Amino acid sequence: MSDDLERRLAGEAPAAGPLDLDRFRQAFVRRADEAGLVDVAYGQLESPLGTLTAFVTPAGLVRLSYPGEPIERQLEELASRVSPRILAAPERTDAARRQLDEYFAGRRQRFDVPVDWRLLHGFREAVLRATAAIPFGSVASYRSIAAAAGSPNAYRAAGNALGSNPIPIVVPCHRVLHSGGGLGGYTGGLDRKRYLLGLEGVLGA
Amino acid sequence: MPGGRGVPWGVQLPPFETLVDAHAHELHRFLVGLVGDADAEDCLQETYMAALRTYPTLRNGENLRAWLYTIAQRKATDLVRRRVRRPTRDLDGVDPAAPPAHELVDDGLWHTVAALPTKQRAAIVQRFVLDLAYAEIGERMGISEEAARQNVSAGLRKLRQQVDR
Image 1: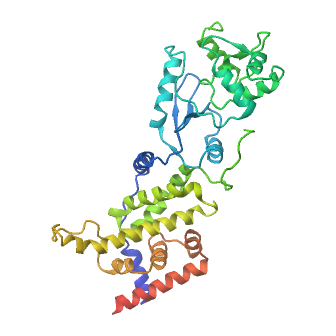
Image 2 (image 1 turned 30 degrees about the horizontal axis):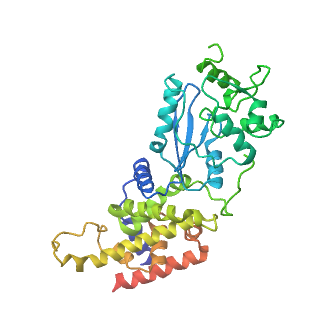
């Protein structure tokens, strides 16, 4: 008797078509975005330096990462430092994607996508804001950047700040070199630094 | 990255994106059991929208799955209530002959399930539609294995009374 009822419950359960997760997610992200509930949107873009991931808040580009940095870890970090309302929403990164495409194609020298500086504070922020002012095709030394950030002797700390730049390329830390002419370091590896300086005509291609 | 402000809410919550990937399929099946195939996806949208809205204010990031199930259950209940109200509204101008768009496949049994108290209904759906063990049901509902078992048997008892009548 009871077995019969249980068999009927299982056998006559409402039929389910499978959920189309991609379509569901797209519709959901659109609604969430319209409701202003996506605090961090992210999307990927192809570049000559590999697949980059752009993270955008309503204030602007907050993070741009090279391949090799595990996406899960970046998402977790942004979840704790910005907001856990993070969704893949590639359309929201379109402006950054377009400008980076133009830059790599040699058609853009200045980025004017807004930058969200909230991951940076204090001296690190000062260093990277000074770096953002170095024009296309120019370079600066670690020492001069430290000075521009208010602490001429803190060039090592300036180097650390540049090495953990959350928004490489757009905040052009590749334009900072040793005063002796050495390349210094780079968050994405020296080959990428060389490529970017070549693209800007600073190093022979 | 050093120098950050730490976790402003004091709780480490995973990026919301992972909640969609991890639970959308099972929540969808759960909702199919509660409201039927036709409405399950809308209900799932409502569930995730409501979850996203309050997500950053959560005080506890531990059983997010149970939290999502609770919201889904609530959204399903809202929908079922709206359906019950619909016929009276239909009398005011809308074609009363039009069949309700959202109907469970009906031979009566699952309609009877739809009338069970929320927790019993949710437990029955998880047991017989999702084919879950009591421990798994308890985990999803944020209750003990024993409480899950009791909800299922109480639901079955009520169903039996209705069906045998």
